Length: 156
Image (cartoon, rainbow, N blue to C red; front, side, top):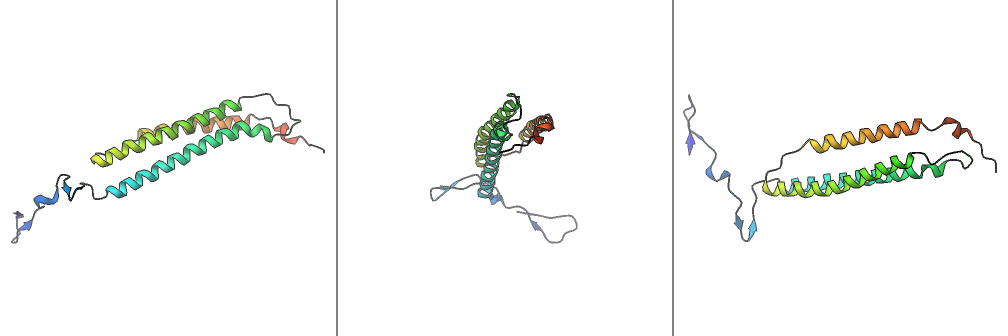
C-alpha cells in the first residue's frame, strides 16, 4: 500500500501490514513484539540487584548503629540510650526493601513479558522519603551524643 502526499509526484510506501504482528510461534519458540525484550529483562535484573545491595547496606548500617556503643571507651558513662531503636529501624527498612525488590522484580518481569510496562514514581518517592527520615534520625542521634565522652583518656 502506498500513500501520496500533496505535491508529491512519487507515492511513498506506508508502514507494511506485517510491521505489527502478534506473538506467534516459530519452530516451537515464542516470538515477542518487543525487540528489546532481553535488554529490558537484563535492566530489570540490574535494578533488582541494586535494590538488594541497598537493602543489605541498610541492614548493615542498622547493625553498626546498634553495635557502635561497643566502640566507645569503657569508662564513658552511657545508659542503654535509644540507638538500638534507630538501628532496628534501619534493619527493618533494609529487610522491607529486600522483600519489595523481589516483589517489584517479578511484577516488572511480568509487565515486560506482556509488553505493558509503565514506570511508577511511587516506589522512588516512598523510598526517598523513608531514607530522608532515617537520615534525619541519624543526624539527631549523632549530634545528641555528649562531646565530653570523646575526651576520656584511657591509661593502660
